[in-house]
Image (cartoon, rainbow, N blue to C red; front, side, top):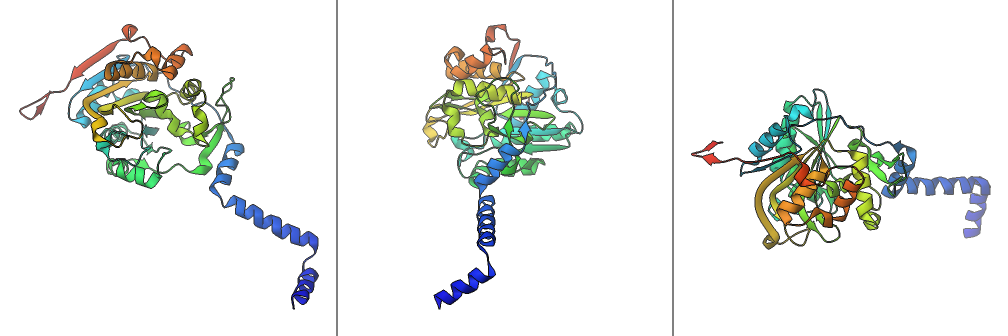
Length: 333
């Protein structure tokens, strides 16, 4: 019986045809896997560094203390010169919060959803054609988007929130020698008119702190664990590639210990502050000094970014405005 079947099979399919069928099957199986999608995405096209507008703000950095996050967000951007400094009519805007962890907002592992929503609303009010929000999460993406509260907040604000598509990661071409050369970067992060970076202030076991510069790791694909080798050099390279137009550090609730994941409310401090600057290096230097009492000279990637000419780490030489929003008899002042 088996011999007869073998004869029939060999009669119908030559060795050459059989190998073709087998090869086609293996290729189909390979293409069906997410890994292959990412591999082909990395080799299909090279991505050039983002072109950033020349934006001159009223201050190098603005910081605001208060309780009403939406009002704080509006006022802090107004003090820099207004949202129109950054967003023009018809712009495609990318808003990049930290949505990396499956944590509720009170654990301070992800950016405050009210801050993200406030930024989305301001961008749309300025005439943005589309406001895209995404992050390459560490925990399962659906749970991160949902439990962080960011997915719901963005949708209600009129923004477009989605999971990064594996096919849209392309090999980065830095044009100059870089350790991150050919590393996959999400193309939407580069192909936009305005990039607004909204990290939350947290501690980090490897980099000490995670702020504006570290938050940009969320636009990278591939095996991101390899970035931790010589990370103090690699993070500034990503900064040089993305060039955010605006950085707003969420210091409303900050994580003091066990970052970046968090998970214990005893590790969270309510600082009720936002820090904004077009200079990611300055924003991070200021946050490390004022929120954590850590000299930015002791944060490797901040020091390296300043050394590379990507921003100013010297707070004393920056034009800074600090103010508070008070609520008196229900009136914001």
